[in-house]
Amino acid sequence: MTAAGLAVLGLLLNGCKGVEQPGERQARGQLASVARLYRPQGRPPALPALTTNATLAEFLTYAMLNQPQIEAAYFDWAASVENITAARSLPDPQLTFQMDIADVVTSVMPGFMQEFPGPGKLRLQAKAASSESQARYFNFENAVLQAAFAVKRSYYQLWFLDEKIAINREMLRLLSDLEQSARGQNEVGKATLQDVYRAQIEQDRLAAEIANLEDSRAPLLAELKAALGMTREQPDPPAPGLFEAATLDLPPDQLLTAAFARNPRLKALEAGVRRAQASLDLAYKAKVPDFSLGLMADAKMAPVLYRPLAGTTLPIWRDKIAAEIAAAQAGQRSAQARLTSEQIALAVDFAERSYDYREITRNLALLQQQLIPKAGKSLEIARSGYLSGQIDFFNLMDSERTLLEFRLSEVQARTQRELVVAELSLLIAGVPPPNAPLLAPLTDAPAATPNPVDSK
Image (cartoon, rainbow, N blue to C red):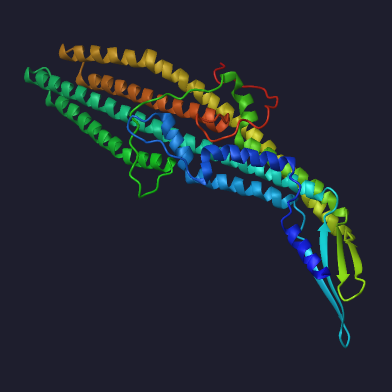
C-alpha cells in the first residue's frame, strides 16, 4: 500500500504546473496577439491577390505574411517564449527505490525526491529567458521591416525603370526628327552627310540603351519575387502599375528620437543587456546552495517505517564560482558595449541618410525647376538655329544629350529619394508599414537629441 501510495503521488505530481512568472505571461500574451494576425489558428492567413493594379500596401502585406525569413524569425521567437516556462520550472522529481538484502530481502523502501534550486535562482533564470524572448521578438520585427524595405526597393526601381525607358524612347523619336532635319539640310546644301550619320549614331546608342534597360526588368522582377517570398515554382508577380510615393510617417524633427525608441536592432541589444544582467545576478547566486527533500517508506515493516531525506549542495569551489561571475561580468560588459556601438552607428546612419535626403531634395528641385526647363528651351533654340544655319549639328546634339542627361538624372534622383525615405522610415526609425503583424512599441522613447532631416 505504501509503494502504491508513492506511485500515485508521483502520477499526481506529473500533472502539476509551476508558478507562472510575470514576464512569461506578458510574452505569451504578446505572442498570441501577433499570432492572431500572422498565424491565425496556427495557419498562414489568406494572402492578397497581386495584380497589375495592386497597391503598394498589398505588395507589402503579401511579403510580410509570406516571406520565409520572417516566418523563421517568428518561430524562433515562439520557441524562446516556451523556453521561459522551462527556465522557471523546478527539476523533474525522482522516484527512488532501495532494498536491503541479506539472506532474504529485509526491507523494501520506495521513495520520492525533489530538488529545489537556491532562493531566487528560478526567478533569475526566467528573467534571463524573458529577455532572450524580447530579443527574439525584435529580431522578428527587424525581419518584417527588412522585408518591407526589400519590396519597396524593387517596387520603386521597377517603376522608375519604366520612366527611364519612356524618356529614352521619347528622345529616340526626337533624334529621328533631328535626322530628318539633317537630311533636309543636306539636300539643300546647308549640311553634310556627317550630320545624318551623327544622328544615326546617337539613335543606335539610345536603341541599345533601351534594350539594356528592358533586359534589366527580368532581374528586378526576380528581386521583387524574392522579396515577396515566392518560390521558383510560382509564377512571377505582376510589375506594379500604380505608383505611390514614400512618405515619412513621422515629422522630420522626431525621426531620431523615434529611431532610439523603436529601432528593432537597438531594442534587441537592449534586451540582450537585460539578459546579461540577469545572467550576472544568477552567477552571484552560485554561492547559494541548492536543496533536495525526499521521503522513503519501508513497506516490509509493520508499522511502516518512514525515512525523511534532505540534502544540500556545497558550493565550495571558489575558483569555479569566481570564474562564473567573471564570465558573466564580461558578458554583461560586452552586451553593453554592443548596444553603445549600435547607438553610435544608428546616429551616424541617420546623419548620413538625412544628408542624402536633403542633398537629393535640393538636386531634384534644381533639375525640375531650373535645369530641365532651361535645357528644353536650349534644345528648341539650337534646333531653330540649326535649321537657319546659325549653329552646327554638333551643338544641336550636345543640347539633346544635355536634356536627356538632366531628365535621366531627375528620374534617378526621384528613385534615390524614395529609397532614402523608405530606409529612414523603416530601417532607421523602425516605423512599420500598415497591416504589419507587429506589436505596439514596447517601451517609451529615451531622451535623445533630434537631428532634423530637413534642417539646413
